[in-house]
Amino acid sequence: MHPYLLHSGHLLLPTFGVLAALGLMAALSLSLRTAALVGLNSDSLWNAGLFTLLSAFALSRILLIATNLHNFLAYPILLLTVPSLTSTGILLTLLATLLYLRIRNLPLLDTLDAWSPPASLIWAFLALGHFSEGSDAGLPTTLSWGLRIPPSHTRLHAVALYAAIIAAILTLLLLRQLKHRRQPGETVALALASAGTLQFLLTFFRQPYPYTTSTLYTALDPIQWISLGMIVVAVVLVLLPGKLVTHAV
Image 1 (tube, rainbow, N blue to C red):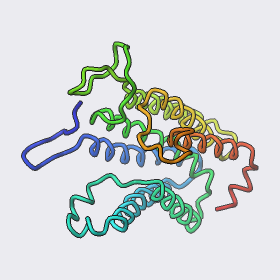
Image 2 (cartoon, rainbow, N blue to C red):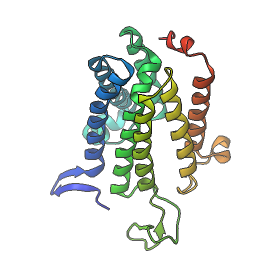
Image 3 (tube, rainbow, N blue to C red):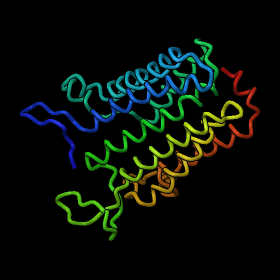
């Protein structure tokens, strides 16, 4: 495991942060190509993607500060370095993005189709980041490619590496499908259904979610609930007439 690319005194350069930044830039660059495939202006899609990323960052930090105001006043820099993207932050980012697309008159399904391969590419980079820092631990395994995370000598499934490989393959498949899509919404539906199914299956190799106070969590892992939600949305996109959704934004 290599959690830091650079560690010199108080100077730390986390590998996860570097890979996340590279993934975001690669995704934005890829969106220039996918925009052309769906007939959108590449600059408009780039700006929309940048708005979404900045919104996610800003809204997550605002929520973090609002819910930890006392700690922020005492240790502002330390608190802002804490990962803070929550389900509430994602929901607010989604709403802000939908409003932005409406203001800019960008068609919803075409935009989501164009964003599908870049989103999968970001997933691949983030998974590599988790693999590099030794997070996203898997269940014990006797397979030869199992990872040993010090100080333990037990081999664990390399779930993060599995996810990175899967996401990279999915990115290529989505790009191919995008070139041959027959109607708006097909690519994002495929992306949601595929990613949801794969994430659901990956949970069988992950260590269980540690917080089980909610009855929902005892029935299924939170990631499994999210995965099922992604699959349901994909089904809705396939069954719902495309024109209705297209004109919703």
